[in-house]
Image (cartoon, rainbow, N blue to C red; front, side):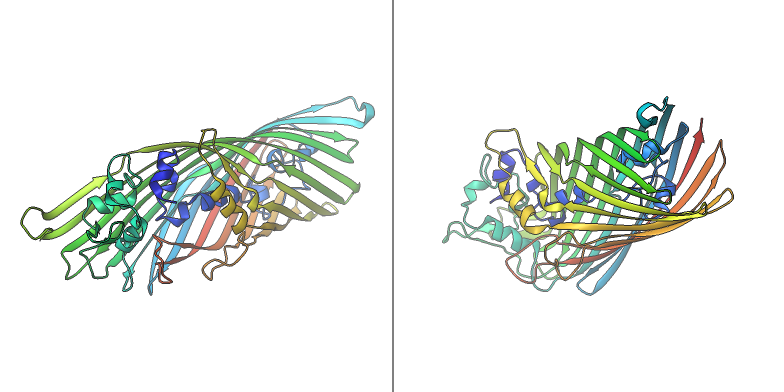
Length: 498
């Protein structure tokens, strides 16, 4: 399937198939893989929250926990995020970092006492916001590629099409390969229609800088009820927002060739909103044990993306046709700006947890989540648009995983000390490029509590790995960047009960 046919169908995001991290299947995983979120208290304990209560985080994870509030409160949670990426490419390692300040949490909780008839002791309504994904990241790489160039990708992508398909309304018009054609990097062989060659025969020094920005957030409108201090029931509505952008500048530098440099710039902006629902229950069979279960439905997103690309080449005053009719020095062109609209359904999540309380000194708690990443699906309301190929790729590439979280809290007078960790297994069915995409986190935190005020602080350190391909050619030597990611996240939650 060629890039332009999808553009004509209104799916501009398929244009940058050069960028494997931006394919539909990879984007579905990026927007489906939600990390633990909540207050500083919860984050300091590894994100455990399914069987706990009395915290605004319950509004998202298990609304039944809201039933454990005995007062109303207001909270705000400022924080910071830092990502460090080590990129390895052709024997070179490059380190990049990105830090940003934000407000990952906010809540208003309203608790009301009941008359106790039929065991209904109290109810709590909460309005809360949590940042559930942070996409801010910079990475770059560089190295001598002695086996291929992006020009080889253009030659392979254009194969089988006559050069008339580069004209307006042609199958290759306005694609990235079209940019290569417009910059004289490829030309159809007169004797073999549909086959292409390049006047550039050498291999380049390659480099690229990539900037990712954005986040996913969720507003929750949730209610929890307390039945006899033994059973707690809850339900909530989640309203999600999605913001993601990428800016990429890919370069190739040649020596001893008619061409000096190639510069390809791509920009992609994605905006979306979605909706889901969560149901939950917490039981207290014994005074020192709590068991919780919750289910979050798939999130239904409505998404708009905008894509554009620009290419510039610098030549050595090259006489392209050998007759003086076309002397190349500086050449450039750009695609149109493409706007696409479609829908994405990310998978639901089934969670279970248990907490054991140790007198009034604290507790330990554990959670598990079951998430089927293969269940993500794209769709479009436009006639003639089909995502069947992308949905099949998602189904074949990803698997159901079980995420684990473990944490605890020790209480000493008005002080709280917390620690925990989490583990998110590789969502791929098979290992990708000899790299596992698992994410592990270690957390810690402290807190101070009084009847009219409390403050909690948490730190989360996470490690993961990823891979990136600037383009693919029909060869085992397609360029591959391997990345080690380390993130640090800190936040303070300040609460005012009333």
